Length: 242
Image (tube, rainbow, N blue to C red):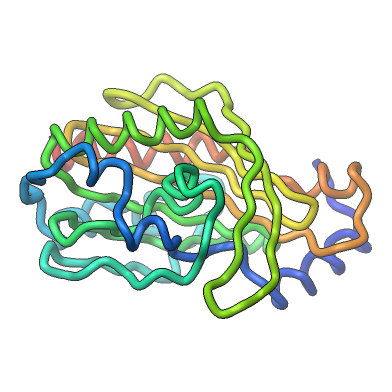
């Protein structure tokens, strides 16, 4: 949907001012899949293999550009918590792509589209032993069935924000797929999660609305799931890592 100049200007200011991302306290303390898998297996993938399986700018459809890629080796520790989420059982959905265990391997690409500067996009590949990848997907699915409204705050801040998870119809990709969104009056995040054997692909779209917008203006700013991008990334994972 076409975005008005007023709505775009308000959202650009909000995008500069704040961000909706953060590593959750529950991820640092022990995630659901860690509790279910007391003896995790090492990932059969290397960080180099996962980074190679990410789309490049030349391979991305719809005018996207990849401006940064990073990867984390299996020995790399999980990130420190920067966020508290309540209920804690819902934290696994808040930042599902976060590296939560030393056994996992991860590679991430940050993307933008010059024609649509408000939206932020990322693609993350996380490599697990296949049994642990299945456990991770089951944990996400279980949390999505139970979680609706959440509250979250930064560890070093007293401010609390509210948002709500919404399950969405998932495309038929890979071995199993989940799709959901996190919605609030000030931001939107859309997640598509696809497992191909032991590799889980997370594609996230992120928009910060700011305050003072009407429901119609927020609807104008809400990004659609980038189906061509998602399918292209999953197809490359299948070609490269199966």
